[in-house]
Image (cartoon, rainbow, N blue to C red; front, side, top):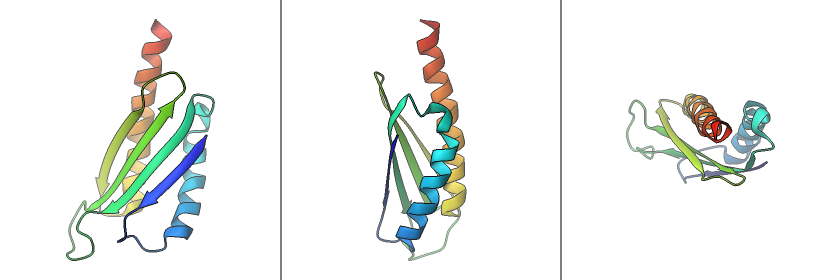
Amino acid sequence: MLIEINTDNHIEGKERMKTYFEGVLEEAFRRYDERITRLEVQLGDENSGEKKGTDDKRCMLEARLSGLAPVAVVNHSDTIEKAVSGAIKKLKNALEHSLGKVQQH
């Protein structure tokens, strides 16, 4: 599973953050390692540092599945860590739903 992490220009500590989140994502989706060919992550600060706000950090996760349509989710929170954690939970649920449908057929 290839993990590609992209950030906007308003996220600080990009390289250290990428290394940390790669480990978190590998662990979280290890169960799906044979099904996911690529995991794309987009992190951003929607208020771009100009003003403080709640739920202005955004994480979009898209799983590219072998032989199936991609599955994507978005989660907002007040920190990048919480946004990623919430997106992981949402993507796991979406994968269970998508892969469950495939197994039923």
